Length: 254
Image 1 (cartoon, rainbow, N blue to C red):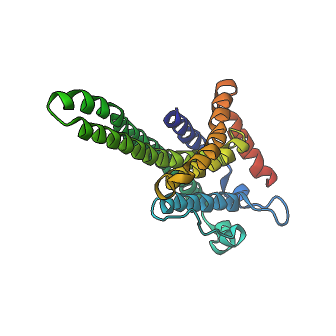
Image 2 (cartoon, helix red, strand yellow):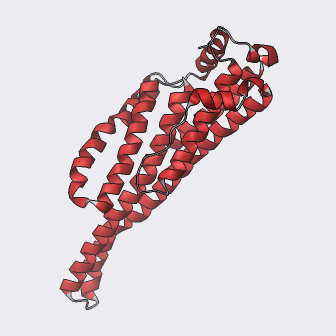
Image 3 (cartoon, rainbow, N blue to C red):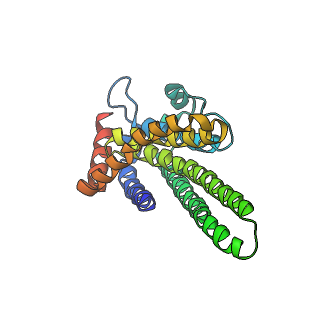
């Protein structure tokens, strides 16, 4: 389901591009009120948000903690002079970044599924070792030890798969928060769940004794997926409404 959901969001981005370009140079440059961002600055800020979240997804795979640098959104918008940037270029950059983040989510999902599928073989290995190993003359104690190690390897593989699934949750949560087509609270909950998945996998490796407590947190955070499923089943994704809200937000300076 996660891959189909990301594909839907990619489609929503494609539909949004013509609507954004239709604002034109003058409307995209106009400030609706003093102190309010123009559409150009809003899109520039969304580019900054996408770029910062993208590097956080990558950094999380390369470091041992989940502490990332923040950024001052007002300063970033001002220093990069988005208000003077060509409107067409800004829209193209925004669309490209969001498409890339969506593809990163698909990557996490596919890798996680592949690792988990391979790890499931660990469930069958003990049966083969205990049944056929003994028949081939392998000492029963050695066969039991090998079966136990196979189950341990399965557990490790599953923890690795969950780490990639956590990346999927982070990407999905980010896209939902920025999409305005699904309640933002669900997106925030998915972001929290993604961090919980990573914490669970990390604790499994570095502090197995505390894994039970972290797993309880993950189970509670997993309600975010239930909320998303129920929303999609009952309400669905209204891309047309999203385009209307986005255009209205630009006009009012929201």
